Length: 314
Image 1 (cartoon, rainbow, N blue to C red):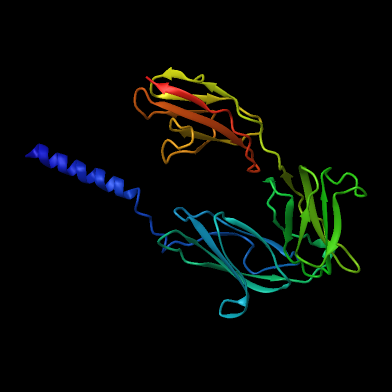
Image 2: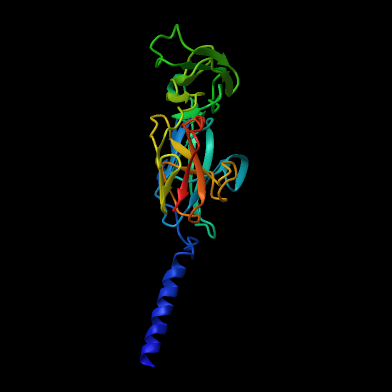
C-alpha cells in the first residue's frame, strides 16, 4: 500500500512538473521599469530611444505615444507591439506622454507612463531615421524600395545609393531628392549596395542617417554534386545521403522519390536542410529509392538540381 502511495505521489509531482511547461505565467500585477527617456524630459532631439528593463515571461511589449496626454488625447502618435526592450522613433516638436507594458499570450502587465517635451531645433542637429530595407538583407529581385520617417523642418529628402561606400560622390549609383518618404529603385546589376538619407530645406541640411547595406543577388548557386551512396548501390537502412558543400548555399532541398523517380516517397519530401547530408530510414528490402538535391542562397535563388541517383535497400 505504501509503495502504491509513493508511486501515486511521484506521478502527481511529475504531472505538475510537466504542466508547468505549458502553463503560461501571469504578468498581470507586474510593472515595467523604464530606463529612458527620463520622466518629464525636455529636449530638442526629435529622435528618441524608448528603453526599459526586460520583463520575465513577457513575449512582447506594447508601446503607446500620444499628444499631449492620455487623459486628453489629441493625437495617437504610435501604438505598436515589439519583441525587444528598446525602440527608436522620430517625432515632431510637442508635448507627449508615452507608456509601455509587457504582454504574453494570456496576460498583460500594468502600464508604466512618462511624459516628454520636444522643442523645435535646427535641422542640422537632427538625422533621418531609416525604416526599410533593414540592413544586411539579400534581394533576388532588382526592385528595392527605400523608406524613412518624416523629419520636422524638411522640405525634401536626399537619397544616395552606392556600391563603393560613397567614396566618390560624383559617381554614385543614385543621388536624388524627393518630397516623399520613400523611393523605388530598379537596380541594373548585382552586388552589395549602401544607402543613406538626409533631410534638406532652403537654408540647411540634416545629418546623414545611418548607412545601411544590402545585397542584390539574382544568380542561383551552382549545381550540387552528389557524393554517397553511388548510383544503384545496394545499401542497408538507415541510408546516409551526402553531397558537396557550396560556398554560396544557405540551405539545401532534398527530394526523395519512389522507383518511378517522380512520385515523392512520402509527405516528408521535399525537405529543407542546412547540412550536406540527410539520413533516410524508411522502405523495405528490395525497394528502389531515387533522390536528388538542389541548393538555395541567402537571396532565395534556387540552383540547378543535381543528377538523380537511385539506391536499393538490402
